[in-house]
Amino acid sequence: MKLAYRYFGGEGNAPLIILHGLLGSSRNWITIGKALASQYEVFALDLRNHGDSPHDSQSGFDDMAADVEDFLEQQGLKSAHILGHSLGGKVAMHLAVADPARVDSLTVVDIAPKSYPPYHIDDFEGMRALDLDALTTRKEADTFLKGPVPDFGQRQFLLTNLKRDGDGKFKWGVNLEVLYQNLDTLRQNSLPDGETYTGPTLFVLGEHSKFVRTTDHEAIRRFFPKAQIRTVADSGHNPHTEQPQAFLAIMEDFFSSLVKDKVLP
Image (tube, rainbow, N blue to C red; front, top):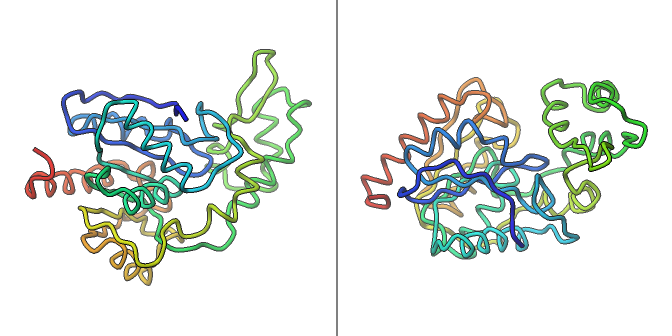
């Protein structure tokens, strides 16, 4: 599958691939992607069934990791540094364990190598219940979603997926039904027991996030024995948007360690 992507520059630097979270897209990484282009050549991908990438009935971790490998082939890259947030972090971990030669370093943002209880159900059910045929403005959509999704910031995040088709009608840019049907799969641990990635690894966590607990650190280090674990103060599940300067400072430290260890020139 040929994925849509944003290119943030940095030609001549080591390549960095950024993978967004569930119901997100490459646009969530514009600020960080531009900043990281001083150190890497930065590509932010739209995962299948998200953003401007093709829709497909299959949406498992094998499928999404294969898409990233296909992207590397299309760009003529033997390997890259991989950064993934939430669902993108699960895909990044899966790729690193399955094909470590492709992954020069791994950065995982606020997700752990474990299975999760159901989440995002209210988001999906609210989006599915919205009558797109009757919708005339984005404000109407926001008003409708206040019931199932009371958090303003989360509603605005979801509404980034609302687009107009060639006739001016509203549609969801994400493949909403396929993702909804695959939620049980996507909440599972993306890694098989006993597998490891021994390359340089960074986990960046939000201080107030519910997605990664201190009790998860043992599993992180079991799958990723070289993992550094850093926490961004005063942030939740999206430390890269909630505290971008603190996030970039952690990325700078990790970049320096890669240079020191001669992973980067």
